[in-house]
Image (cartoon, rainbow, N blue to C red; front, top):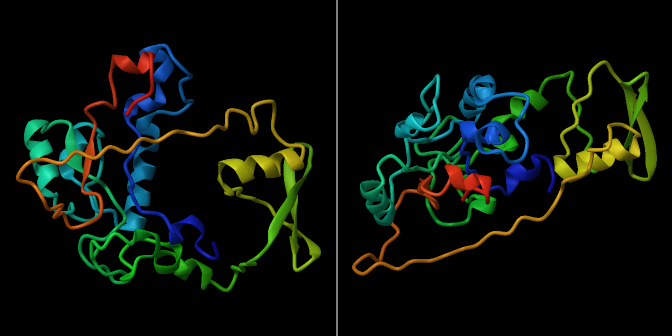
Length: 247
């Protein structure tokens, strides 16, 4: 994928978790509650949204409480989304997204051409257009094409990391290590390193997705200002979550 990782090819949809996602066991008797709550992470949601200049719908605060407004105004809804909003005003909102509604100093506004995996106008947030100032710091070094082999630890604390690059192994020591290699590779690195307990790497599974298309008489134009303009919570939260997942 290269420098920037998944931000190079993501579609930049950025909805928050619902407050009840953190308390499934106590609310619906299924799964497990998180050790943290929505209120605990809400300020950090705001920080991340500021960094990525998220465009979002202020009406969404009625369902997902916020301490700060979205940095950018919402995208323009498509005609079908406006119809959904009229029918379910408290359930249908403009999708929060890191695809710019208005230009920023580094990014153009979204051109709505359905090529988000490699945005032709650099409208969506990526590491390359949003965080390069971090890599320009003289104390920061980036080693591309490296593979972390293991985390070397003593007494339960990681002291160094061993990685391979161009056929050679290297070891780097430090005081703080941050592991961010997605759910699969992070678990693989921990298992190779002899770290973690019985739950590391367990519970990973495929998820199924279904796509449905509905064509409405007299509506022939998805005329929003970006690829996805609507997010509907009509089937998301409720007592049904005790029997099956949200949708």
